[in-house]
Length: 581
Image (cartoon, rainbow, N blue to C red; front, side, top):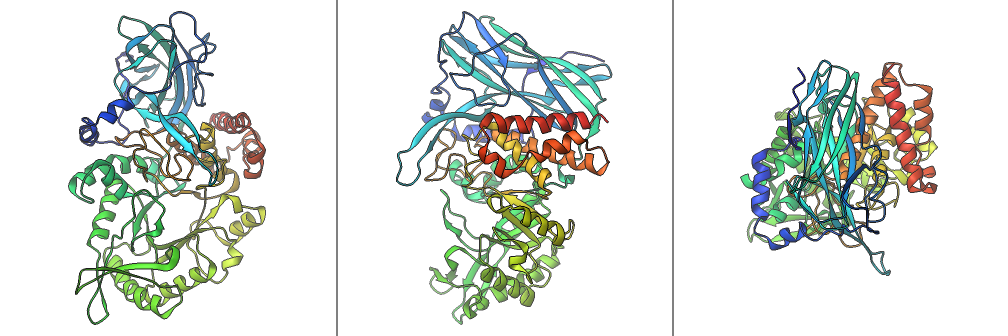
């Protein structure tokens, strides 16, 4: 039955509507929130022809210089597997001022049935400030379209543009074939632009995200969510606000829960401090009592959102070696630098490991819990591994760093993540020879560096998709990034934080707003998962493997934005072609 229902474009990915409403309520009386809706730099570089216009834009940041263009063919064409999230971008521009511009979507009609309009979303691409200042240099400022917002309508001043992000969540049981519908931008007074949509659904199905083998590890930051919304950390309201964000992360196949076992594991390099989910209390006799109730509660919450199975605990080797505890007699917080390998470090962490190991074993979580380190040297890694073996047998070890396996020979690092800048052919040969899949997890990461390829607000869009393709090209199990919602003061208006590049500390925005970066990173993860399935089924073509061979970090450093986009797009096309075999 090909019923053509038309509705305002919006599907809720994993977000609970009540939490979305709560987010909106918390910010509704903020005058600066209204400023967000009225201050974007949307003017075209040159006055357009009369009327309301639109075109298919591709995956590029829209600016006043590139928004207007050839609108001869407005058809949005997508190719996808079942159970995939397919993306596209269109851009609108106008000569005359328009009020209440809104975007409506129809069902996508196919010969064997429809993909309902509820599976299609059309969201405005909103701007945030992006300022970057190298130390000792003048800051460079811009505003970049990154936020995907569900505003029902927005105005368009004269000689202005707006980009719109279109996504289709393809049903897992839909029949393969061609589906057709429309996305329509309409303004008060009747001005409209119609985009025909053609979705080719291939006869293949992605597993549910929880079953993807791609190992996605994006660190969470609960305290940033609490601070932004002005709620008590780990109160019911805080959990309600986190849930839709954490469920969106789970919908991308997230495989880890980020927990803390001491305050400030990375010092205070965030706008909001990371605190400990384990309370350490020193008794008058010098022994320690520990309260694990918050850790238990938070892990259970994350599991209910679909995160896991691995649970990562930061950390027994803090930056600057500082650990914190509460004095039972006075209530004062005290601290000391306890270097891994020292008797003091063992005296503090040894009893913890024994208690913790027994606790997670009783919960049925032993084997899923990792003591994790970030960018520590061999000495600290060895000392931590030694303590785990002595006091916490059954707990696992993880680290992000820049060493080859041979450089920590004799230490079993169950989950190791390599800085992309230190991925050499020698490194790849070692991990493939010594870290068999299923026994170890081997991933890679980007952070505040390199400048490219990366996932900053001002990174070319296709670099985000490139990340997932790199994992497929080099044989990594997955990807790590240090921040999912580690927000600066107010990222909706300004993504800048200190000397970090804009967006380095987060992917999603308050109010359950995702970003173009997040959608294309997720798209790259899906592509990597499809490549795995094609390879395992003997369906990877010569064209696909050749396209993947061009996904290389050293090569990307020398490529232009357009060249990186072309390399990523060629892999996408090759995957689609191979999927039809």
